Length: 273
Image: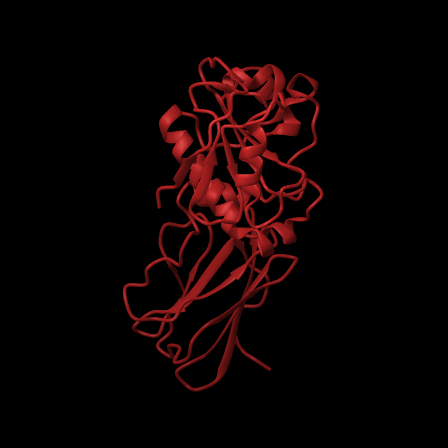
């Protein structure tokens, strides 16, 4: 979906150069139901600060204070080469808090990143602090710009960048199509990224991990599954699928997900005890 950008102009800006950075900030406050609007109104004052956009949990809407062509006053020596997003919240928030309480906000940010990337040619790629400070192009935290970027610590180590970038690239926003009228189950892995499982029309147990373009068949036996598939993912990265096979026996399929691929755990398709 295209974001609705509510123009709330700030007078606190300067001319911009060629943009190479998309920078993520936290407001360190403004956590109310209209936090982004409140922050945008604050930036209209004589406060010596601003941001390109201000984002909160109001899904699909952002408040734009400075055009992407100009330099907002939010990361000191990097203002002219960056577009910035101020988001409602605190750098001290944990990953679980962000994902549990701020998903609409995170999805807004993902869509803003995608729009800025397309407009400016900035890749949807996380870059390191040294790369951000030395001329590379990509996405970084405010904290990674160091003292030349005002010396701040936002958005914090708990901010779920991996999930936001997956959404920005178009992945994981909805369950993938199954090709049939099948019920899809999902579970988050320890990084907050969704994995999916379902049954095919022929009774195969199908699995769709992050980064895969197609469903993978788990149980292709002629004793195909006859019940919906449940999926759980443990903190140590074991993915377990549970279902009932064609012989009406409860089964489970358990493997470990590691660095983007399956690793055998020693427990395959077995009858559940």
